[in-house]
Image 1: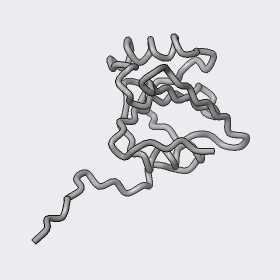
Image 2: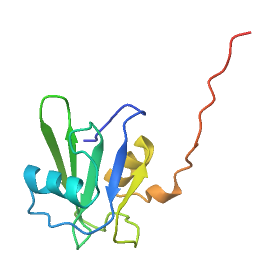
Image 3: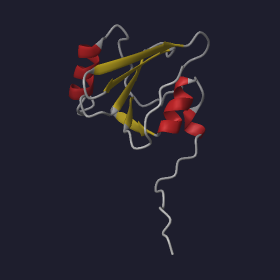
Image 4: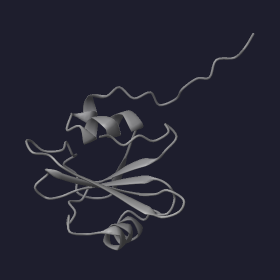
Amino acid sequence: MSLTFPPSTKIYLSLAPCDMRKGFDGLSAQVRNILQLDPFSGAVFLFRGKRGDRLKALVWDGSGLCMYAKRLERGKFVWPRVHEGALRLSAAQLAMLIEGLNWKQAIIHDEVVTPRLA
């Protein structure tokens, strides 16, 4: 199973390890207080536990908060070594991360140029 979002969706990777016992309220408080972002903005917020084998995603869908959780049976989720703040990911990087792949190897295009009709 995978999570898919429109390419315009903002996706944030929380860099600090998270207590995986946290639920909706605890994770939304972490988004607000630590990341200084709005948990009800429609952005996707990703959290990883200290062991690195568990991942949680929190997103507001317009009517309520949704939470996704995954535990890898082997290996760890690829995460930056920095322990403060957040990092933006693309939808492609999110898909790679959820599969346990090294999302840092994805090629990201900063600006997509829309072709003009002649």
